[in-house]
Image 1 (tube, rainbow, N blue to C red):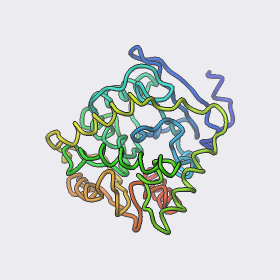
Image 2 (tube, rainbow, N blue to C red):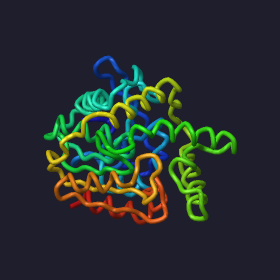
Image 3 (cartoon, rainbow, N blue to C red):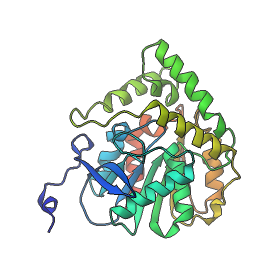
Image 4 (cartoon, helix red, strand yellow):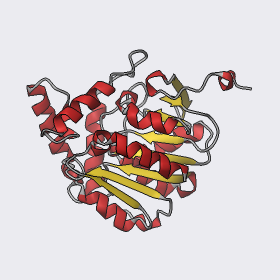
Amino acid sequence: MNARDNEPVITSYAKAPARAISAGGVHYAYRELGPKGGIPVIFFVHLAATLDNWDPRIIDPIAKNHHVITFDNQGVGASTGQVPDSIEAMADDAYTFIKALGYQKIDIFSFSLGGMVAQALVLKHPELVRKLVLTGTGPRGGKDIDKVAGTTYYDILRAALTRSDAKEFLFFNRNATGKPAAKAFITRLQERTVDRDAPISVKAFQTQLKAIRKWGRSAPADLSKLTQPTLIANGDNDRMVPSVLSEDMRSRIKGSELIIYPDSGHGGIFQFHDKFAPVAVEFLAR
C-alpha cells in the first residue's frame, strides 16, 4: 500500500504537493490534489506558463471531487529536457507523462496553448480521453493563430512599460471590468507561497511561440473525429486566440457545448471563475 494513500485529501492548489516522475529521459514536474480513484483530470497549461499559473478558483472546485493533476511539459518550469517546436511533439511528451503515471483513461482541462496540445493528443490517442474541456484555444490551421506571437510580444512590451504582468494585457480587456479582474487574477496566482515552480526560460517561451505559429499555418485538423463530450469556453474579445475560433471548434466537434463570456478576453474563464467553475464541475461529473 502506498504511504500517500493515508494522507489527508488536499483540495487546495496552494497546498498541492510538488511531485516528479521520470519517463523517456525527461524528469516531469507535477502537482496533484483531490481524492484519488476515478478518472483523473489532467490540466494542460498555457503559453509561457508553469505550475504556478493555474487559477486556484478553477482548480479547487474541481479538486473537491476529482483527482487533479497539473504538470510541466518537457523543457517547461521544473521539468527537464527541451521544449519541442511543434504542438504534435508536445502532445507526444504529454502522452509519455500520462502513461508514466499509469493512466488508461483521463479527462482533460486545457487552456490556450494547452488546448492545442490537448487536441493533438486526442486525435492521436482517442481511447485515452473521456472528456475534454477546451478554453481560450483554437484549432490547427485556425484563422490568425499564427499572429499570436506578434500580439504577445506587443503586450509584453506594453506591460514592461507599466511594470505590470503581461497577462493583465493579454488575458483581460483594458477597461473598467477587465482591469480589476486582471489584478485579482494575478493576486490569486500568488496564493501558493512555498515550493513554487521555476519560471519558464526565454528560449522555451520562444520555442512555444514558434510551435503555435506552425500550428496556425498547418492544414486544418479533422475535428469531426472527436467523439468525446467537449466543453468549449472563451471571452467574447480574445486578442490572442480569436474568439471566433471557439465557435469554429463548436461547429466541427459534434455535440460540443460552447460558452462565451461577455466583456472579457482570453482569460474570460478566470474573470468569470465564479460562473465557469460550477459549469466545468457539472460537465465533468455528468
